[in-house]
Amino acid sequence: MESFHFLWVSLTQAVSLLLRLDPPLISIIDVSLRVAFTALLIGSAIAIPIAVLLTSKNFPGRQFLRMLINVGMGLPSVIAGVVVLLLLTARGPFGAFNLLWTPTAMVISQTVLITPLITGVMISSLLGVDQRVKDAAVSLGANRAQRALVILREAHYGMLTALMAGFGRAIAEVGSVIMVGGNIAWADGISHTRTLTTAMILEVRRGNFEQALALGIILLTLVLVVNWIAIWLQRRAGR
Amino acid sequence: MITVEDLYFGYQADRPILAGINFSVARGDLFALMGPSGSGKTTILRLFNLFITPWHGRILLDKVDLQRLTGKERLGMQRRMAMVFEAPALFNTSVAANIAYGLKVRHEKRATINNAVQEMLALIGLQKIARKSSSLLSRGEAQRVAIARAMIVRPEILFLDEPTANLDPHNVSRIEELIRTVNEQFGTTIVMTTHNMGQARRLATTVGFLYDGQLVEWGDTKTIFTAAVDERTTAFISGDLVC
Image (cartoon, rainbow over all chains, first blue to last red):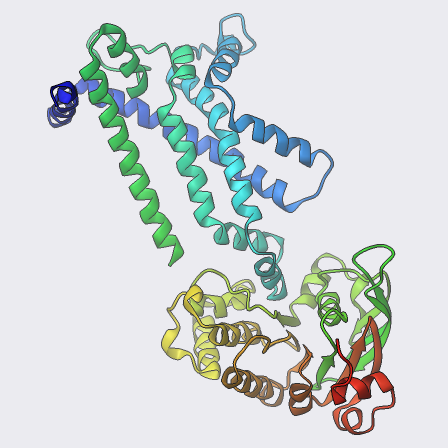
């Protein structure tokens, strides 16, 4: 049992950090959530119309686009990180915007990573809607937009699952955000681009394994709370 | 009201499912399209509903060719009809929300919708389960809700695709009574498909017999059931035509 002592230490540290409302920790949580939710918002705004288009219209190149999305679902974060880094670096095409080492850069890299994932899951849930239900909407006088709304509503469980998967990948992301964000905290410890995952990497490098695990426990708790809220929303929507 | 002229259709280029169909349905009629499974009955209803386009021929509704309609005209025509499918195909929401759908997409006022939903719930005898989720309904209840959902928009023509398939005798009787009420009280023209001859005989004012993509015979119910001319119709009615 002695060998599992570190778990107890980490757990008490996590609780202690949260109860103390430790300002650096709160700022890290704040950056993590803001970056993940912003990426989720942008990613969903891109994914929903693409998913609807790819499941409702037949056009040349549709299969190729579906294939690209499937490939994107497994995109290694390091590739996304390098590409965004090259685009935002001072000599890159968007260097003039000075976005590198900012939360905005992290949002961009997370959006690149989660958009194909959200789109792919949404496509499969939209394709799962019974054709007879779509026909029923048309037979009851629905126009194209109203039919699309019926399909979205019928697929709402899958759509929310897509959002949860996207959020999960964004909040757990480490490779690309460290590349384009730089894991920066100001002198007083307040986070600029430090997230829970990048802070964990830092603590591991420092040899503070219990502290790293404590941050991990906080991260898991956050994911749990967000998922709980999403499930509650699913149930409400299903009524 | 509905005229079908020389209609051809198939899902594969060289395999027509319907070949040279001609018939007409008068306003207020209850027309039953009989025939064995796979004879093309549902395909005709899908053509009426503009889900699919015929290879050749015309479907006229009040002398308007359905295939010539575009955009808003097409939607306007679709809103004069409603269809109930063999499987109820209810939306994953409450009974009341399902029934209200047709009026919601027509942007009717909330009070109008609520009153109409109550009227439809009374018609199908399901007032007590208005808030129940459609996924929890029995097959018979679901089919009654599907009919109410179609009837709330007061369609001029109601298409019913095998409305009592896979139902127990008690529910068959309830649905048949509902169909009769809709036809007689609301004056709705009904085109229904069935492979149940007894049902066609009980409900329909006119019947047609579809066999192997061809409308073998059609006319008023009494004539077809007592003095059919084509031997395939006679064989089907007498139960000798094994399908």
